Amino acid sequence: MTEECQKRVIRYRGPATEHAETAIRTSSGTATDHAERTRPGGRATLKPNAQVLAARTDRADNDMENLLLKLFEFLSTVLREIRRFARLRHATEQASSSAVKDENVNMVCGEDCICHISKKNLDEMNNIVWRKIGEWTEDHARHQFYSEELLLLHKKMYDILLRNKAGTRREQWSFSDWCRRVAMHSQTSSTATGQYIDSIDRSKLAETVSYRALAEDIFRNELTREQAQDPKQQFRLGKSVPQKLRSTMNSILRKQLGDPHAVFFIFTHGVPTLLDPEKALYYIDRTRKVRALLQNMLEDLMIWHASMLQSILERQQHPNTAIARMLSDPEQKQWQNERRENKAGAKQYMDHGERLVNQIDSGKRKAEHMSATEQQIIQDFQSRKSIKQHEQACVRRPPPLSNKMLRTQASW
Image (tube, rainbow, N blue to C red; front, side):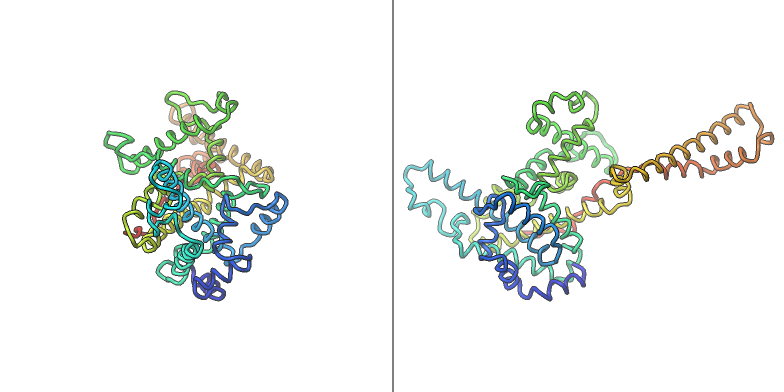
């Protein structure tokens, strides 16, 4: 975080666990109650009107305390996914074992198993998250992690994961599932092609192959019958993903990941262990130091998450992205028309210069017989001035994600 941002946090926070009590108990209840109530699928459900009002209040609250609270909710929800997966796994094992009774479930997985964490220890799990957040806010070496801009972006993406546009909460939390689903289609440069090509082109090719594989998956499993029968959304041999299907994919991925461009970060870096419950439990089952392991896994998740937010934010702040938004904004019709006219005029001026040069080269006309205006047009074309003016008037595509990991992940 920036120094100013750190001061704002420290001013109200104090120790991480103390802040957990201060920030959460003001919403009534313990840290466990709050996480249970606010997480997707939590036991308390507000009526639709109350949900909408709560959503409006939350969306307008951009204080640092609320930004950190949203980060806490996101991270604690991921931890609870591990616990839920563990309980389902052991329930399956218990059901398949006739020798084990309900009251002897501890014999199957042990009292220290993550699926047997009590309410008191659930508070400890939440405190693990707060302590880690507190460490990051106080560590000057991590000033690039979770700046105020990144926390604002996270709050917006997290709101998309939790609620629809009207403010009603979604029925199911599927962020982790979709991260793994996207990563499953990731193609490395070695699997994308067997030919020797430049490393940058090889990376782009692998990303293209990954995106098409994901598009085929979504086309088969997520589209309605009407959408699948739409010719504009169907694949054609040797062609790229249809534009209308890309639009449909962006809508689906935005709802499931918070931002459709997150898929390109996942293609490059995969998913951290905490977003893969089966893999996380594999390591948890093989250690007695569960809390220390969870802390290290949480560290990896936060590095991965902050890096993804940074890549998305850099793209959003690029000038080409701002222009692209204005071109699609229905309230910018006048600006769009002026830009379109400027582009047409620049192209006409460039083409006129090219025609005059061709006439001189072919011998149809002589430069000394041309007017001063035509000679100026020729000079602008030969000096590439008119060409550059046309290029500046053309729409430039926003850049791809940088996909840079902020630093090496923690080893455990």
